[in-house]
Amino acid sequence: MPIVRAETSRAGVFHLLRSLGERIARVRGAGLPFERRPLFQPRHVRDEFQLSALCPALLIALCAGVSLAQPRSVALTFDDLPIAGSVGAGDAAEAARINHAILAALARHHAPAVAFVIEGGVETIGVAPGRAILREWLEQGHELGNHTYSHPDLNTLTVEQFRSEVIRGEASIGPLAAERGRRVRYLRFPYNHSGETREKHDAVAASLADRGYSVAVCTIDNMDWEFARAYSVALDRGDRDTAGKLEAACLRYTAEEIDYYSGLHKKIFGREIPHVMLQHANRLNAALMDKVLELFENRGYRFVTLETAQADAAYRTPDAISSYGPMWGYRWAKALGIKVDGRLEPVMPAWVGEYGKAGK
Image 1 (tube, rainbow, N blue to C red):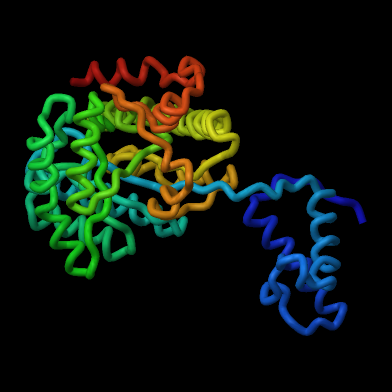
Image 2 (image 1 turned 30 degrees about the horizontal axis):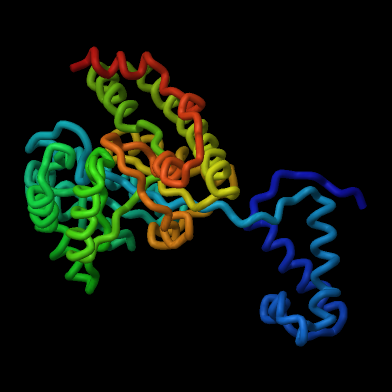
């Protein structure tokens, strides 16, 4: 029987191994499903049957050219809820439509997420409709996080001013989480600015810890906010041709960024680590979310919670101080003294930014 070589997901590999093991076990009269028998035990109690059952499965998998590396994973996060961008009181219906579309895509792909809320945005579209949107995220099993009250730049604030922003940012998410016996666990810094000096960085970190927060990092950024600005201009102009080009360009760039940052982490840690994807609640993601998630699925990624992703040892690497807001891979490289060349990162097509700015 010829061996067919194919690109197989890591989850598929383990399913293959288990299936093969079950068949071998049953042929040998073991009488127990393979998954109920531990694959590996301490040497002094290792079962000869288990090794003999596993080895043929491993041989078949290896002959098929299948990788047995650790499965890839990514946690999904969405910023600027209830709606990203410049909004007004009349945008409650649009915000609801955007969030419904994103949530529907997440449900289709069984993908958990954390949604980071700007309380000022809730007030802008109306507290009642704004909280209804947030409640829907919780009802579908997702988590809400704090993105401050007004999305200020920490570089321009004192520690106490930022603490006030954090507390005011809890006005909706705190009670909504409490309704379900939960608490708000994560904060994401606006602009990813976590303190431009060591003193401020550490003081803010201590203040957040005092309120029970963990910082939500991000390891992939596809500049969706920039694409979304141009996309909104195209839609408002009725320019469907450009809107379609923007969708395609965003997907290409997202794929490039996924691959780039996976390679960057290999250089830093010698392995791939769980990703945290930064996205926003905008019209573009409402249209593209299924396809964005498919980009990960086609590369063998599984969707995990933010808690699971950030439990990886890599996330305990110190956060290098910066006045900018780079992805955490660059921060970790700097903290560890590992040289990386950021010029190798893919660049968003220039026309996207130009089109968006022209529509202001």
